[in-house]
Image 1 (cartoon, rainbow, N blue to C red):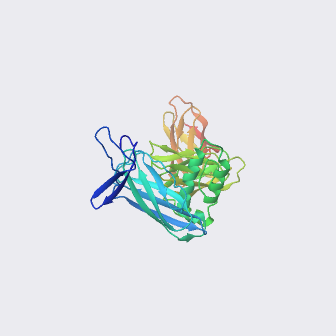
Image 2 (cartoon, rainbow, N blue to C red; image 1 turned 180 degrees about the vertical axis):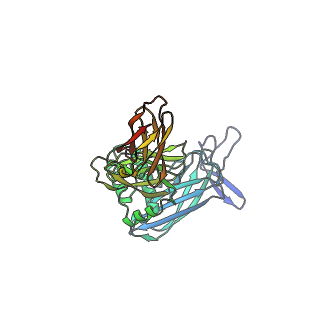
Image 3 (cartoon, rainbow, N blue to C red; image 1 turned 60 degrees about the horizontal axis):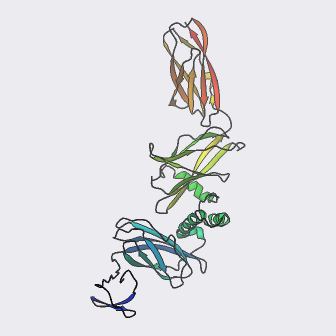
Length: 380
């Protein structure tokens, strides 16, 4: 640059020396200052690329540079091999931080990613795009990453409504958007994810949910800096899960639509990590249309003296919560001892008259379907 760039120059290098040649006659009015741009060394890149068909390829590159960058921008030099990469603008990066770029290409070859930032740092990274072929775009991880970036750009574009384009991309590349759900997961994949749920560190607080009732809870242990965690439902609904700082996990609640038949209800979870990597798995709930059941034949009449505690117990199936309610207004949350048995202690008031009364136990399943059980109590 010379005098704020008004007089451009050409530059050549011979050994350790550089020669600056002005493009026209120039007489500086003050001391001449020449700023020579140079490229940083030590930059590295890793790339995955594969082609689908004859002229449709997708790549994903990760660039690591030892320099801190401010408002970095990338420009692709491809000699006609590929279209513009995504994204083209980045924020500030730390030294040896990762910069992720995705794109399409039409044939194997070498492209160059040139990056510069607001401080003048410049570097070029060669990226080799392979001729390896896969059957479909879904089999190419780089294609899914590119579709994610493309959909994100379309969803935020103010120019026009890109909903049809977004739906088309979502359906073809099987990625999540605001308008579609990723439901076309092969059965063998669903079976696989069911078998490895424990390894994926996924948990729910209930296995029984009801037909349209209650608010079942989903908890997913994914990194706090994940870009997106969503739950996809069989009816096509998409629900974003939110980071819960108290529990240090992503969670949310949902309702099963009324009219859903009893049986398995599958919820697909997709975690989009900060670096673009996606994990997906299925949670399987049991949709129950009836309340919990109690073994009434095992109920026995209780006896107690005024001012004394008495143990109340119930056995049954599909019980998520149990509460004992007394005529004198006491409510006790019962605890489970396993095998469907719930127990709690209530205390008969000292002034309670001698005679017969009852204790009511309210049983709830995971969908808030309820069953009431009445137990006789003799105050002696």
